[in-house]
Length: 244
Image (cartoon, rainbow, N blue to C red):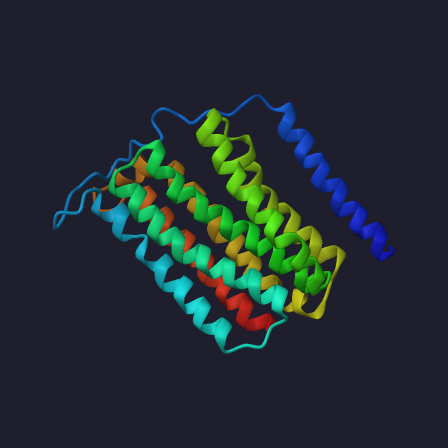
């Protein structure tokens, strides 16, 4: 398949994703979303476990930035990874702020860094597989799309754009690696698949927040979600080391 045809196919997949999003009914924030099972206060920190379990994100983000400094990478791809690792670190800070006092306003600071992570990773993989120029072309629009999805949710209460920003890259990135099987992309497949797997596990833990906490009252599903998601981001740092 010609390169141009493969690019058209990716554009078509993206267009279809937007169409599907628009055909869905608006997705509203569940009223019980902020009600977590483990609300214990320790050392003066409310919701202690859910707050402290965000610390690994900060460490992993800083570790990624340190690794980025020691590797020569094309400037557009470097910018994408820089945003990715900053997004991971900011996720630790934003999620800590949110869990200290869970509400829709503080949730903005939790979700915004998550969009940075997903959009930056998509731009980085695009640059590695298709060409550095693609990372340069896509990074800023993707980051703006991620931020816009948060603004739209907070303004209208509709989560559809945020859901698209969070989940579509999980489908699009493997498609890019399959259509443009660069050497870097092939080497980066295993940690990327593991990262997706750990993120999926994090979502399972999140849905089982109270059932897990009821097993003994030691740890909640949401706390485990943070730890599993942290493993996922650590694997993204590992992937950067492998492909670069």
